[in-house]
Length: 470
Ligand code: PR8
Image (cartoon, rainbow, N blue to C red):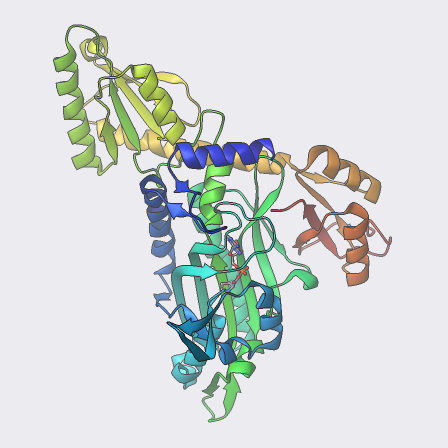
């Protein structure tokens, strides 16, 4: 187990995010702290999607014949599907699949819903659990068999140009979402041999975890008319003809929470962006033998003010234990801001603040008029600081290489992401993967530079990224 992996497991347990002891491999229990982080994350996501999508909820079970209609799609998922074969003691006539994703649940219904060009576009999403019998090593939140937080959007259009635009829009949506969590990413087009089963092409977001491996945190697929033909989803054009629709779908999962934990955390534990944190501020009264009550009363007033005026999630920790122990605990749980107030601070009209992302003590003048505003602006500094630091680390870890030898050396010595020029030919791409023994992540399309392919020396078409992945 790598150092990061050990750290990650320890944090999930100590910060009470999830309990991994549930007796089915790849299925875990969300604990109250984790559940709150998840809830705040989903709120951000829903707020963005609700601007131009409608939320729906489809059944978990998919009839065997529907699942098997789209040949390429089913091939891609055949090893991963869980089947329900019995109802009580009775064997079912038709096996039912636990959805591994919902194309084959939704699209037969879309075929009933779409009638005319005036119905289009349609944009739906749902946030549900999906099941994939993953054969690769499972890891909490990262590779699970029950994906508890699967956001999947599905859109229907009347032209190819519109789906292209929707792919752009979906990328914009996920950018906005990841930006608000401070998660940095690279966006690439997956190579032909690594696209979503049934898609025309796949765009993917990957982030970098501290061990130098990347994690795919979101994907956007252009489905063209592939599924429309299989599920007979047609619309009537203004001139009365019937045409197949064009579709896109895009999704993300529990991995988003894994990357918030992995990207922002440090030796002291979790470090949460204020928008996601169960508590955004913790207030610790510093009590000596005398004057304890006065300090607590004062802290209560501050707590009340920040709660009512600022709508902040704040916790006054007046437990009768050492302050040091409290600091340690809240740091580990990732509370973005700690305020300490003792008798002397009250006399001096100030307070000590410690931002979780930098862990340095600062003094803040206490002005009741502007307190809420001051704290809000500190929280937004924290958000920015976290995002900037995370992006700087990602950028430092993308390194250009000019030869296969250099690529092998970089990847084995430094991990991270390497970038190089590639001709775009499948056979050559496969050769590169074999020689470096790591798979291509994807291509960053607009290759401006002049160059030769790192492997075959032909004219290069794409700037290509490669990294070890989860
Ligand atoms: C689709 N259909 O399904 P996708 N554990 C955790 N996260 C996972 C796992 C897993 N075992 N497998 C995938 N993910 C399309 C789009 C509807 C929505 C995450 O696409 O198969 C990955 O981050 O690419 C992946 O990018 C996302 O789910 C969507 O899955």
